[in-house]
Image 1 (spheres, rainbow over the protein chains, first blue to last red):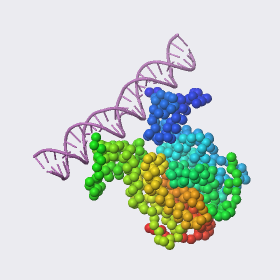
Image 2: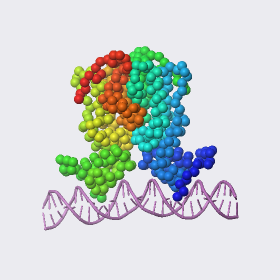
Image 3: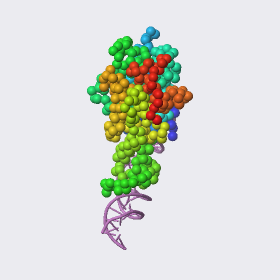
Image 4: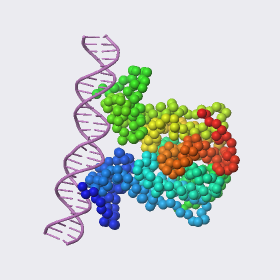
Length: 234
Length: 234
DNA sequence: ACTTGATTCAAACAGGCGTTTGAAACGTCC
DNA sequence: GGACGTTTCAAACGCCTGTTTGAATCAAGT
């Protein structure tokens, strides 16, 4: 009956903290199988705790889910922060960096990104945790994109049009994240490692946008213009 | 033990055919709740048949799922066929028609498109039914898009590059279908009915592509060029 | 009228699910 | 050492799931 209303009094809280272990295991399971198919028993087995631990620490499955989404979200923000630029950076470079950053975050070859898979589920079929995710994580990123586009276009386009262009850019990256397997079926196997790699896609999406906005000459014209892929931050 | 291996001998097969009713109800339930969360009991209740009917007609839940995906797919192909153009149609017009057609099919205000939701699930998390879906349904559509793009660019771009541009176009539409709710949170409420309506999006995506390919002048320039939205097939 | 096969149905089955329980184990203070 | 609040555990509880069963119903065919 005692519903564990107590601040954790082990401030170091290493990987030994059961609560942390449950959150991590739950995130992985929810990301892999979805809310319904993921079972508390599997989560607790992976976390090395008793099945009753979930009820003890989180109350029920739904609250565990919400907490694990927020936990993954915080992890991801810490791992891949928004890019920051020197004062004089040219906007073309900023756009390329932003797109490369977003693709790296979405397709991230760094580590098996179960956090992204979990958040993707939230985006595709929103639950209660979604609104928080948008406000804390997605909206700030999108605002940066729009501000970069504003820098690129001056005052030729209004804010609503800039948002629409921003959606066009995000959509291209989103397709590869959400429907990657289908893309892999439509494109010859030899191309997906080259023309559709994160780096190549960053070049393409950036060039596509810059050409559409008239900053560089159109795709396929002899002079591919300047500075869209000189050097990145890495 | 008799596993119902018999051709249906009621060729008229109106809405009274139990098999058809089960397929339709199953499609709706699977589309709404996903494979795991959808229950055979709910499906049979909606179809007005006994729970044992699923086992009788389809064997088990998984085969019912696969059959219902294919059924929805066939329905959709019949409802929204590929656009066909008069011999002399200009490629800019073709691109606009294609994009408008794809958006109409995805966001379709025609009828509550549970068929699309079901297929979207298959794309986002492929099962066995996915490969068939790609070969029969998605690949032919994509081939038409690439051929239109080839018409537009002549031989300035190779086939691989054309595929990548095609993905850019599909991605923009896909975002609105798959992540529509998040888009609705990022964009002011007043804009989603106007600037982000299917018709307006078709204009935008087409103009964005044509500008990037150098067919028309860039976005935001005084002369928006000619003929990108003269008239459609409807 | 009787047989035969296809179809429907209510009821039950075994198994997995989220959740609860009550007691044991643990650590920490007086 | 003993008392107390926190944490862990094995076991069980209902409930719901997909599936099976065996009899009832129906529609011809002979």
